[in-house]
Length: 348
Image 1: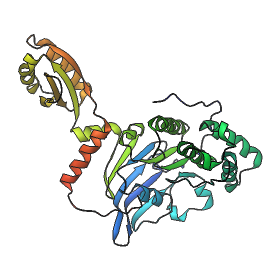
Image 2: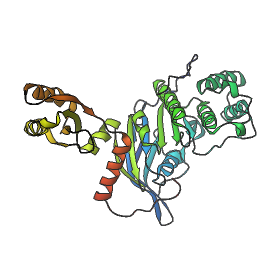
Image 3: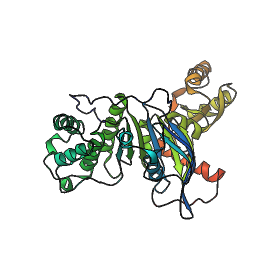
Image 4: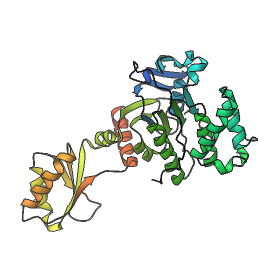
């Protein structure tokens, strides 16, 4: 992760959401069909105020279609969508002012400068000139484009165009931000900086819904919806996704190779161990120990190994597989459990 961005002037906090509404977004059995093809089918979830809610899945799985239903671009074929307490298709202008939206494609004016695009975006919300200029300066500093304000948008790099779109989406101080694959096609360093910005927005009290194809980015989210072929597989925290994929937690340990059998027998009898087996593609003596909760089991296992003088333990730690591995496991499980074909639109 890259260092935090310079923020000499904090951005204004957003207006507070209605405290009587516990969820800022609710999808209830939502489907969207184009002709005879379902792009999204029977999706339900809630987004809570002040969280970063991620939507992850391969291209074509329905992420963009779902975002467009939550922003009112599409109406669902069946089911209901509620955003900020009402159906997005019924938003009035003052309701839309509470929302910011970063689409996948660059939609600002390529033949206007950075500053001109920002002034145009501000004018769309009727911001007074004096307050507008102060806000633009703050936002360009926030996305590190202050030195590029006189550049034409068409001459910006792809990453700079993405940052300009983020600034433009925040110009009216929305409380809810939708970002549709904002880090697609940019390098890992810049992706990390984008997530630094999103976390800063969260600390200011905003809610964010972010779609991504980069599975590793789910680690930055509070909760994540995993989609495949227009269907919702599950919603959980990043740690919850790990535990669902692994069936609990995993402890990785290594003993002297000649002590492997003794360690296997000892651990297989331990009341907190659900399963234990050798890790074939690692050094001899490497074992994977499956437990319900590693925080509870790890000290107990270390104590048990230490009490047996026939076992020389070299290394013990909780194993946290990368999210790419977790995602593959979840997709393979979905293929086994629900092996039916579901059409998905190219609108993802």
